[in-house]
Image (tube, rainbow, N blue to C red; front, side):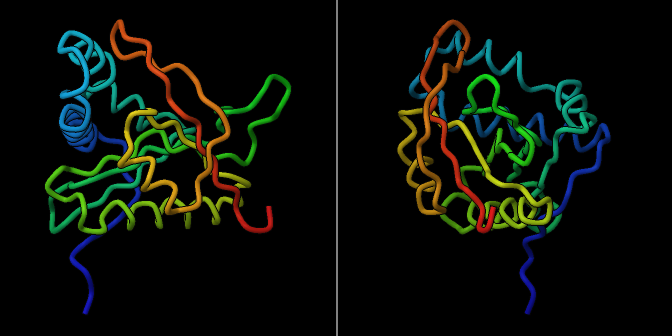
Length: 181
């Protein structure tokens, strides 16, 4: 019996962009609003989520989006960035590094295995692309996400600033090397 969950590559069109903007805004708000000032949240959401913003992201050749649909409903997604310099020092070349810029799952789908299915899809894509590593930034106070990434073998390699409105926060940089590379 097949699963009703479908993970696929996104198409760069206005309909997909609108869905990504809505889901991105919703999941970011659900995850971080309780721990951040409303003005900072509003500024971040306005700067980072909107149909035009997501359409430009979809059209950027360095980005890949994996969409998780349950039936016809978008319930999660991952935004990936090729050749990421996240966590590298000056002079190091980013070729072969895939960054998870977003891994978002609707609140009502968390704990169902959807995030793990998306992560398995990300790691399979990284293998297909012959990546040497997958990297990401995660807020130092997001213990749930940090534990999730640790279960998949990600390890801390540094940190960097993350600006949420006027609030400068610390993101931990995590890395997972890929077998044989």
